[in-house]
Image 1: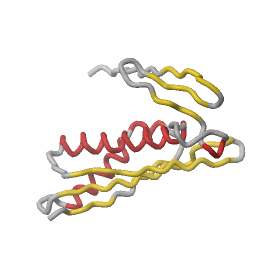
Image 2: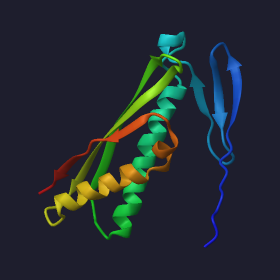
Image 3: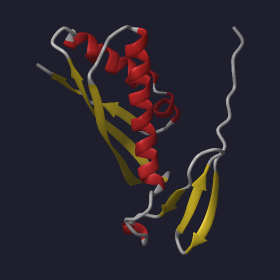
Length: 146
């Protein structure tokens, strides 16, 4: 099978000060800006938040695909992700780590160990985290619903 190359175009436009918008064809605009610690405000998405969100979304969607392909049902999935931004000698300020904490709810008929394996597979196969220099970790919480 031939390799496929895909392209995902975004456009940013400066609006004022330290803010702008990011758009992509057919999608709603997102207000962006620097976070408060760099002179911005809390009412826009920062690149740091978008980085954490990108990894978080990729892990979730990768998990959903793997679970579906494995015919493993789960009842709910939610996750928090925290990106750590640090000054690194010789590299400047970089995202050094993204910690993802998914909470997966399953029924009593689902093997908890299998869900843990599927989460680890999602961690290994998330192409966004595999594309980053930062260490990306995924630490799940599995909830068994009655």
